[in-house]
Image 1 (cartoon, rainbow, N blue to C red):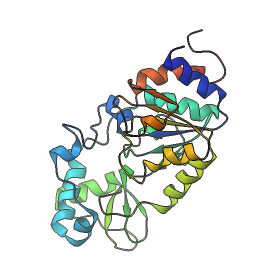
Image 2 (cartoon, rainbow, N blue to C red; image 1 turned 45 degrees about the horizontal axis):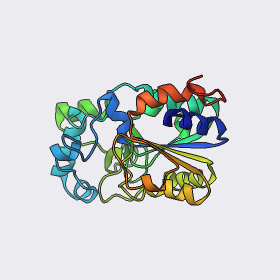
Image 3 (cartoon, rainbow, N blue to C red; image 1 turned 60 degrees about the vertical axis):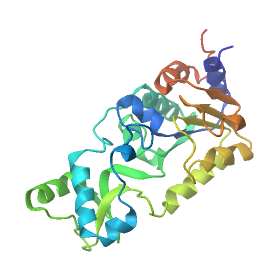
Image 4 (cartoon, one colour; image 1 turned 180 degrees about the vertical axis):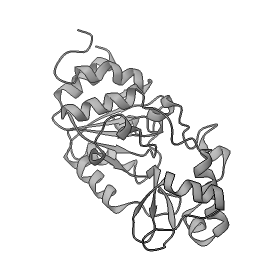
Length: 255
């Protein structure tokens, strides 16, 4: 039996799968990852949360980056990996997607927003740092580009920032709690395209394993948690998901 067939059978046998995704899912849509050669942080220095809050110049630089699209986090289309995950969610096979990505592609592929747990935020909109009010980027773009107006909250006047969790910014308590609950309750924890090196997010696969879940990892490169996994595939996520997702309802892959 091939590793893909084994993964298909694990999915078919699962009553509650949780999918955990990292940058490797979205690189197949042309979105750069963060740390590898050519990744976002090798091309530009990240602006920390403290810098954004304390410096008008850094806020201006951050918004210039956001509206120029230089990071490349938005504007791509979902790929076969995203659609495979969406199929697992739509069928009820998977209860949630926990993602480290900020590109909104799980939602764009058809996963209901309430089923996506975003640990590192979302680059497709902005939020007030004081009251939390959501602001659409298009409403902020023209005032900034035409007049240099740094976005401020339309309700309370507080600082507005893209809804990405920046370096030095506290992890979002609500999504972290939801992710912990999902990891503890699942019987199959499926990692797709994560290097599993960034904590605390990378702690969820190990938590699921300790709680009795089967751990499967699909990632092009080895991860530090491969030795803990029940199944590891060093393959392209889109190809794997396109093959195994249709067999998650009891058919045998390859039959």
